[in-house]
Length: 126
Image (cartoon, rainbow, N blue to C red; front, side, top):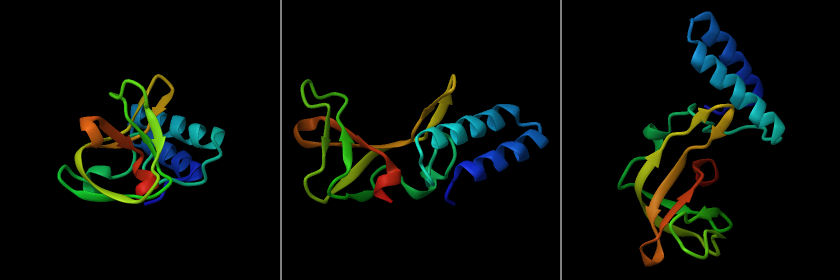
């Protein structure tokens, strides 16, 4: 399922009707976040999307050329753009969440060159 700001607004209304107020607020925050960033649609947004169904530890995925990759443990080069397409084996899959009006996107984690951890947004990879 692809999420759009409108579908998240609708989801928020449905969750409020079902008395799931925290989830409804999260959906609303995600919708506003997408609109502010002018993102038309995403497969995964914050806590929404079945990322654990689509990705799992030990799975091999292709990282396309041009993907923005983060290396949070590297002392100098924390971020880079993949210069070529390559395959990686996932170490972990992190679901996204909403924390005090801030949307934290889900991300995939793998061991990169030199043993440094690498992360990427699954919306770019899929």
